[in-house]
Image (cartoon, rainbow, N blue to C red; front, side, top):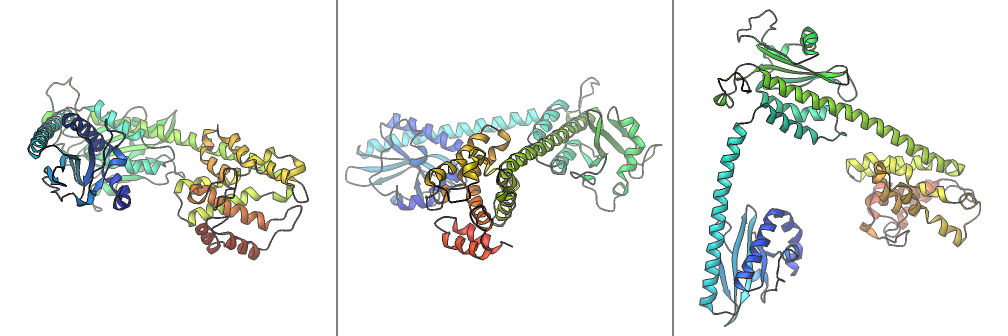
Length: 521
């Protein structure tokens, strides 16, 4: 591999999809069998790079290196790639056959042959023509598939929409708030229903949602936007409790039940296990130009309505309401499980701290300082959220250390220190089978590793130490130095800071030390 290729390997990896690479690998294998020549995959994006390190495992035949530097291959067209032939000696030629074109570049099969020029040209020409014909046939098949897909999409009715909607909702994780779910769902649902406005009104205000979520295409001064959703729900509440409520009035707004500017309305109760979460409201159906051409005159055939809301739209809104209620219920269970988990974690941490009055509160301080440092260094939101729990559990392995060692008032012997050094591994073994605490494992196991590899238990170095462990190493050491022990008084902050500075780059991650000291307040 050339130095130039090393520099752009990561970039080229991101440019090509696995599908393109798999297709190219199959084509490469076929060409090698047809030509009897070892070939290599190369990518041209304006410059050449070798894909050997990504594709050597996928090829049937070992990929023989070219006798010339890859950068010496001729420049080709990205828009209309053609085969190329390059003489490298009086008897040898390097050739390339385009396999796949992407918006980012062209994948070539490149090889070298000492066959006669006429023979090689004929073989390359035949193979190129076959690949071109296969590509054209693939394009035709793709067009046929697109037309067929369009026909299927146009035949979708209520059940198909429900399935698609349910699939979308099932991808929403329980750690997403109800507001996040609704803001993702309502725009798509409004378009499917062909409603001018779609809204979710919570039954009561909560931490998750304290106000209605509205998706609309109407301007601010539209009469319907002045309607109060709570009043609409209260007016039709009894009728909408058991089943979807649907009303279509004439466009002039005539009708006993009609509200100003409202000519069609659907209301569905969002509830789970007799607990009302809120209400979904669809206001004013638009004329559905896309769906109306496929409507049937058969009253038994189920289809969306092209004028006002019908049973199909009501069924879809009910399905959405059911999915929203399920998400809300699951989120409540998730939050309860989180509270129970945190309670167990805190109990475990307290059990460790309670054995030594001198270290009481140490885990809490490490948790708080660790989260503070994680936020300052730009760690992921997930890590920042989980760090308090990781900090509380980082020394859980010390529960296995005998009291006569853990509470010893004098310095530890070498043998006693070796026992202390086991606590990261013991902590890992205690927690590894608890799925809810999986994210804590790296911090528990590696928080005593050192930047230069002198730490324990595995002697990892530098960036090979997980970020969470490097964060904990800094704050754990700082709190340990500034806290009193049976055999010494805690250091001053100034002295501890000086030790951190001196150990940056050997004991601790230098960047994290710098950030911690900068924002220690």
